[in-house]
Length: 342
Image (cartoon, rainbow, N blue to C red; front, side):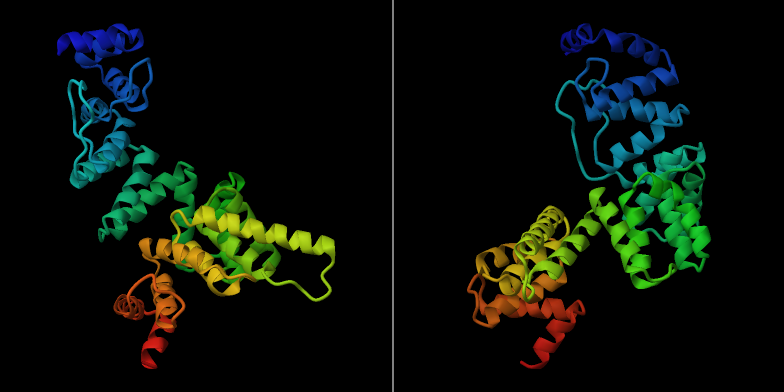
């Protein structure tokens, strides 16, 4: 075992000095070793278990930045491995350790730890509104774009002025953070907080989608599909080409978003089942099933209805009714109306 470890170290001269110092109690060296094994730096192979070992030691010894790394590794379920000779072990998320290290980093003034603490409190659905807001403000004060977006959202919901909210969003918008532009697009589109302005709403939606923000990609893709799926009377050749280009772009955006966005997948199902000039039920079912796998309620209704209306046999009628009922129980208006006519 020791020969194997020494063999690794001979190939990684950059880490030897730090390891020696870390074993003598140097907190900075502990963090350096942990970071090297976390990222595969200093000519060592990445090893999450060994990174846990050193990050947790550094965090407990007072290192500020080590706390957030220890917290993330705990949340991901990686187990501390002093030697790091085998494959990293990964078990259930160590929630208490993750919260403990995030709180420690937050107390020491690390904005990344503060922001991750907010995420953990949301992910674990903890009723800790005061702690969440305090951590969010701490991260926002240090200028973290995502923290500024979160604080802007909270203040907007609490009745803050448009000037105050947009001031908070100035840095995220300047950095083209997708979620920030999507929020502004929504406000312009709905006339909430900001005066209704369709052009400005679309402008910010385009930026958010270009930044890869999935909800924005899904919404822009849906808009492009709705706006361009039908040929207008007297459409010229160039207009026809441009419409098809926008339609293709809309489908491409939806396909990319559908990897994780159920609504995007369901919109593609709707398009191929009833909107496309040449419907393709096989494609429609494929997208509806993808949306169902992502838990999108509308897809439960639409896929079930296809079967009950005799357009598909990809599931039994019993399963189709079950899906319709699931959608109705979740509050889907179409499913509730469908069941009322049964």
